[in-house]
Image (cartoon, rainbow, N blue to C red):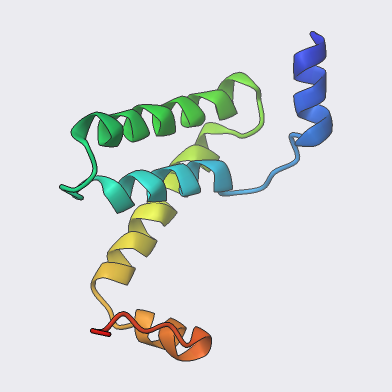
Length: 103
């Protein structure tokens, strides 16, 4: 095993469980910016490509099974959909005192 892979396994042992948090966060990043017109299209496309590369890397490094990738992606899509179609953010605003109104 090459020393770089040994370092990866030392820092992030392949003992992760379902779903892949790496894949979920990568998918959430892309979902969050994909329709933002104030972010350049090249960067939005790069974010999608980078997310796909992260999905692939979890497989090539044997950090996760393929079901973990699909689970992470589906969880990200579900959370994103739920956050966009509910008032759950109001609870977060109440807990953390965040306010996005006019100043």
